[in-house]
Length: 331
Image (cartoon, rainbow, N blue to C red; front, side):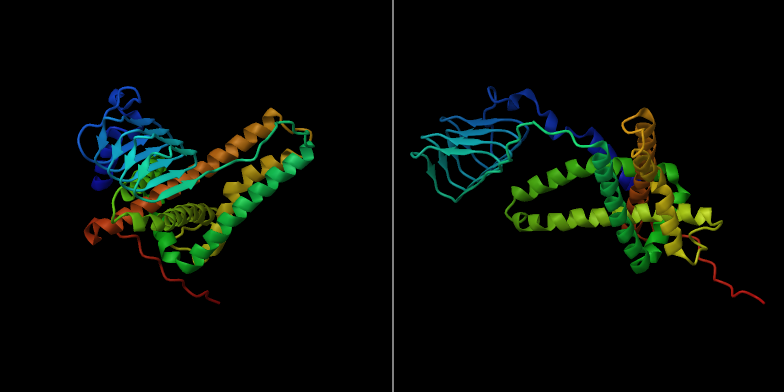
């Protein structure tokens, strides 16, 4: 827990990359010293009299190269313009925007240009019947819940001990689990962006970028395990037992998932009647979203706390109460 608090403190107090100081503005920015130049949602301009000694990475902004870049130039989600006097010793990579390269520009590395184009939409849509919209919304919700349930069922059958441990962690500290889960949700995307950028600007880390999707999938599985554990806790309570004492974990998970998603499903079913678009449907749907979000947040926090306890070692791990043996029924 101490490491987690310290990590959250550093994350919250560190200067965010999105709040870069004024000397990064396109009109005021000039290269100072060596090292990578990383800009997020900012434009970059390398003047003809300047030399950039290090890779240039621009995410969500435009780049104009008129000077000498002695390393790679990477532009993600923006356009790049290379002037006639520009010299790029490394590769030029542009993804998601236009790349305008003057024929007189000298690029000694490879040029990789990927344009993402979206279909034209004129905005003239014929109104769809309310029943069709309600059916689409209900089908999407049922598909989402079915996917979560299938993953939860697989985790229950494959790793029941892990699910029980996360469930106990959530019950032992529900408030702390919710706080940790909220912190994980807020910090996951920025941490992932920082990781990808760090790997992209290092020679050793570039091959490891291919492992990022597996890291995201592992995080999704861990979060679903947390949701499964909290749902199992709810289902066991409704059956008058606990997850530790229950010998039917699959039944507990099934009952818990049904209870957690009941309000959301009810809101979609009510929308087929005369209440479509009314305050009753929206209020019921909002309540269902809040219930699911709370369960997901507590589960994610409990899963993170469980993983952190294992990382700190046995001395920092609080033992889960042993599961009592199942006694055979007496005649």
